[in-house]
Length: 431
Image (tube, rainbow, N blue to C red):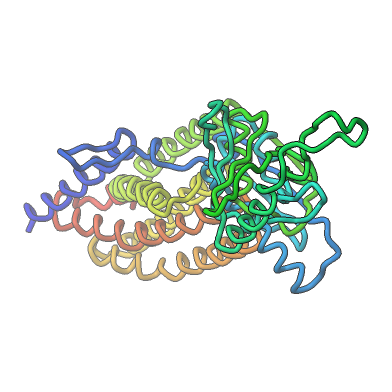
């Protein structure tokens, strides 16, 4: 029994040590590999840097109509951000008419914000103002290059309705003469502007190609003074669709990555010092139970950080604060248990029975404290925005992990040590 308990305890130490090494350095065994927490954790706007903007809908709609407009606006903005290749966005509705967009890692913040907030009403109209198709009939849009000039263009693919409408319009215009007599000088020929289809974006003509042939296949090209970047941006706007309402920029802020990383480094340095002091205090004051608490605390930290990675959660500075607060709660639970354990030892009970009795008496207090805090975290998550949600998520994960490590892991390890029959003096258990 002693040997078995010792081997199990040793196995726990090996697992914890491997977990700590993996968290810091990663792990690779053959084709199997695990990235370190640093490389796999998503960083929030306040750490990674980037930009956020608060936009307000310019509309008089109310009630369900307004709610539907805002949901549609959020969906369109999400599609635009995905089309632009911007990663890890956070898009939430604020109040009734506002939407908050956080873009971690964005280098050109204002450019991204301008592109996201554009109404992007695309129209194809004849020279006489007659509408041919709108952006709603565009199935796909992407960067292309003109086979004649090699210049960047936007290649469009129309849906079935747009293909038919575009075929009818181009067939009508293709048969028109390329040149007509100048009304001011009948002997002079001028370009026939009636053969032109104007491509209008947000009431601005961006291209005016002449129709030479009927286009029956739903393939169209927008040409103009494009760069590859501007053509790609326009294609992304078209793919994203038209916003159902104009948006007014209410608040904008850009955060440099240096500031965010420095803030994270400072927070983590403070956390390291705090954790080290806690570990030393528990070891010196509670001795053997303190050693067990230190091991349980290491397990707690591993559970939390790997849970955040597994849930694909975004780490923010308030999230780091939630993690540190959770460590304090985990230690607090152990303190309650160990004080109960000391009381039972002073009353003359054996170490084994004191452990059972101490845990049993401390359980209710631990549950009460953690449940009330968990409820508060749920409220913060439900009503909070941006970084507050990150704090609430890490706090909830921390509470669950602290209860598990304090109630189950600590008790399991203490009983293993008792079965090893190495530490028999009750002074080594803090009494």
